[in-house]
Amino acid sequence: MSEIETIFRERYNDYYVVVQKFNDGKFGVLVFPHNSNTGQLVESVITEHHALKGAEKVHIFYDIAISKGYRLDNGYFRNANGHNVHGSFAMDLDADPVRFTNLFS
Image 1 (cartoon, rainbow, N blue to C red):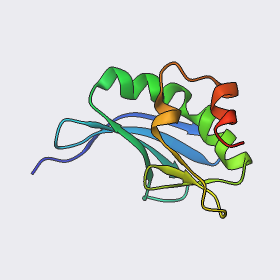
Image 2 (cartoon, rainbow, N blue to C red):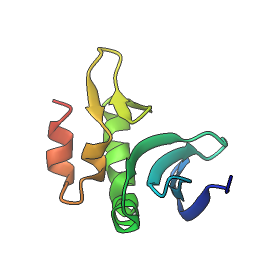
Image 3 (tube, rainbow, N blue to C red):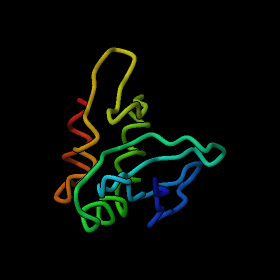
């Protein structure tokens, strides 16, 4: 069994955005609190290109979700009222902050 390879890591505020290549060949984009070894998966994607391009801007969408009272949990942004937004919306390469914010309205 091979190890998971980290191919991208960038710090934002109090967390890291990390891209890891999994053993199955897929790429996971995760958010790690800066003081934790446990990350939350935003989404698993097939290509390295999608993972890296998504990771470059996922911090913008993560911050929007947090500001709206959501937390990242197992690939979903969830709030206390039970509303969920799938992490794939944050990884959409055509996503923009206005369109993403509207998902929380």
